[in-house]
Image 1: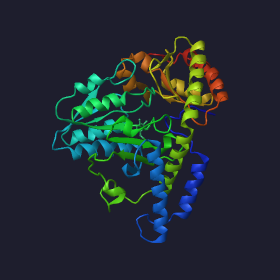
Image 2: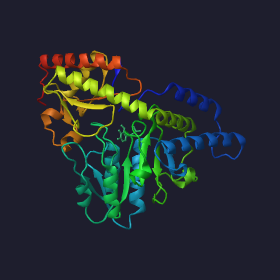
Image 3: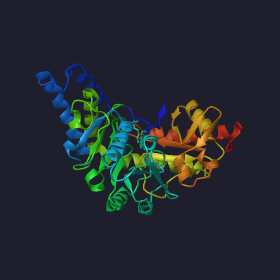
Image 4: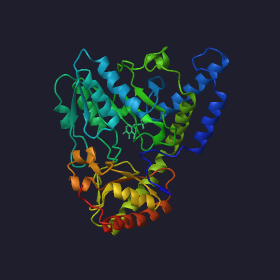
Amino acid sequence: MIYLDHNASTPVRPEVADAMHQALTDLGANPSSPHRAGMQARAAIERAREQVAALVGARADEVVFVSGGTEGDHLAVIGAALARRDHGRIVAAAAIEHHAVHGAAELLEQFGWSHQSLPCDADGRTPVAAVHALPEGTTVVSLMFANNETGVLQPVTELAAAAHARGMLVHCDAVQGAGKVPVDAAALGVDYLVLSAHKFGGPKGTAAVIVRQGAPLAPLFRGSGHERGRRGGTENAAGIVGLGLAAEAAAREIATESVRIAGLRDAFERQVLAALPDAVVHGARVPRLPGTSQVSFPGARSDHMLMALDARGVCASAGAACHSGGVEPSAVLTAMGVSRELAICAIRFSFGRTTSADDVARAATLVPEAVAAVRQSGAVGARP
Ligand SMILES: Cc1ncc(COP(=O)(O)O)c(C=O)c1O
């Protein structure tokens, strides 16, 4: 099997799995309990808080542990909007945001907020002019760090500065960037930033929101003052230990791994384009995450391609929503102005820590084979 789906999720690092097993065995007490066993669990959590803070240029007391990137996006967007509800009831999000952000904005809509969408350019970047064009009364704007489909890096620093100049709070979904490329919450100048452990060798269901000092936040889960009152609920100590260790390992390797993985991705694209000159790499003209390659193969629909790749042992993702009987083009590619015909033929290959040069070389020969098979099968190609 050649696993090229690291943006969907990554294999847990062996040392993380070991540490989590140890934590499950040893840290049985409630981290809020004032006895010795509770304090042991608390100490492990506080160590992880430092490790996460160090990965993304934050202070340990700015780290709030949550159950995943999806919860983190909801906490940041809704928590900020509620905290600022007396100043206005408009939230804004880039058109290319993940469903987790759009979902939070849609929930706010049900409670009387309106939701503005910021367009992107043909390269998949949100322009600063889009922030200038937001209506008065916009209180929160959500701007992702790197897109999960194309990998395109966003001009977050410029966007955040423009939003702050207009008095808005800024959330940055850095779920795809953190652990893969340097992310610095302070340098980006955002108020909230989310990262998720399973995107960089940690466990699923554990994530963190960085709530920058002074940023207002209305907690969504109310409990007994956990996470300094920002997120109620007994902490998932083993998951948090895993997140912390994965963050520390990623920080240690980021400089070398990002270069190695970008080299693999570039070699893959070169070989695939040499064999299939009509293939289109989305976002190729601008800086992207090192390990992301979203490619459309004209005439080979994504759902058929995924099956043809899987039959050849290659795991990838469709850049389109597949459902029985058809595919819908991805909202990200549509926002970039990519035609429906091309968008429904998009496949996302994503490379990571466990990807080898041999994997890439083999995948680069299997992909053209899969494209040829789908095109020959007459599987309706580019027509929906
Ligand atoms: C950009 C982005 N935001 C948020 C999420 C949701 O994170 P989680 O899977 O931890 O809920 C994902 C997951 O794919 C993502 O890619």
